[in-house]
Length: 424
Image (cartoon, rainbow, N blue to C red; front, side):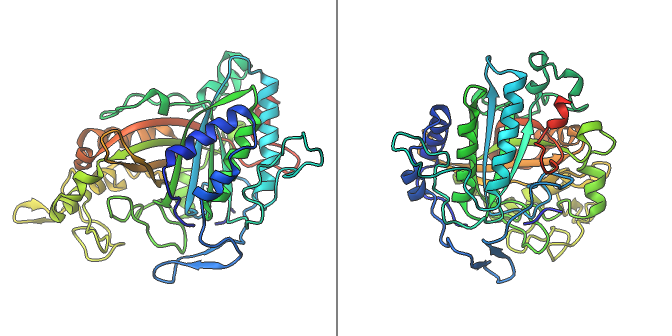
């Protein structure tokens, strides 16, 4: 269906400010800064082996955009880098300008995923502005995917689209433990650009953001690295706390059909719902916690990633097992609270990334998890997170500061654009 590097350096705050400024002004400035900050170790068409030699990256690979049942970037094996940006529609936005934006985005994405520019990088006229900012010129496609989401605000009275609102799309309720910041919450549109070259992902979002003109404005953005979920043939990655993340993630066709894709959902059939959360970690405090406590909090061993009731990563956890009168896996551990066995069999597809924004005002590491999940019923996420937010031992070390929900339309047919059915 869909297909399938190197860490950014320096402060990500400078990159975020540059992206927002570029989008607002519609200018082509900043390519030099971008090239200096987002530098991939391999710009060619070679394969980059993982640490064990089994997890590889082919930078020449491209992912189909048109004529796919589902948008790419969901079941696509997770790439190594992500740029996630949300937008708010402006008071002057119209139904027609929203249509035009989605059509322009679709046409541009179809070019970008092939490793092509979206227009002239060096116009013939000296006074002309470049259509494409140029920093991805000469780079391979790197499995780029761009996934477009529509927030609840798209379906309010402004655009006469209320009758097309996806049945389960509504703002998330407040969840225990939330410390959400307004500047990191909500949004009317979302772009999730993932690629195995960080500069390719950044270039895609930067150029799509320039297209919003007077229809929308940038809202919040996160630059992610080090995928926190795995696809077929990929090793389970680690989060910034050093533990393997996503061992029991959705993977089978049956699970995708049961828990991810929408069926019999009118124009949204083949789509899904995206939940995004920005989760800060108190890294320094965590680093000084004893290993036995860290493992009790996660319910897994730190090195092998095995459940505390087993010896290998993919051993099925035994939540009933006791030793010396106590559960081997603490009932309040992260894996116990999130396990399908303890949630009526419900699963969500997790597709997160690590992030860092440098240092915070206290001089501590400003880092954590860009949590992205896909599910055919957002209530599945809400129910899970309400349990985690109330009881998870991990809560001592994390804070949810950003949040959003978006409907993800199905993939567009050739000659059409994402969400076109909304307007018909």
